[in-house]
Image (tube, rainbow, N blue to C red; front, top):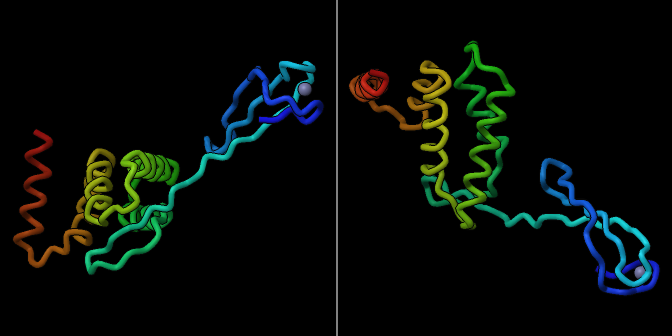
Length: 152
Ligand SMILES: [Zn+2]
């Protein structure tokens, strides 16, 4: 980081603050040579993450798609959009923390179900029935049974 006043590369950080929901770090610096103060912004590079679909196709990871799925599952349920956005943020963070550039939709689906289960049973079953592609009533009832026994 070069001082804009004297060109020295030595400075000390006075203050660091995350902005734009942690995507950017603003640092207040003081030049060690001339003592002038200046501000730098460091952008956190986002590694592009791809989702591998069941048929093998890849597409860029899009948190909005998770939100859409959640909204659909939670239709007419007492779950706020804020809460759902929170879930999406948690999932996004988990995916980014995997440090892998590809993530199968099955992994994302399991993450969503795991979180939805704790929020709303009806929404969970709705999501699971779409996601797991229940072939018949038996599969559906099996899932319900699993859900009920896990609550005991
Ligand atoms: Zn300087």
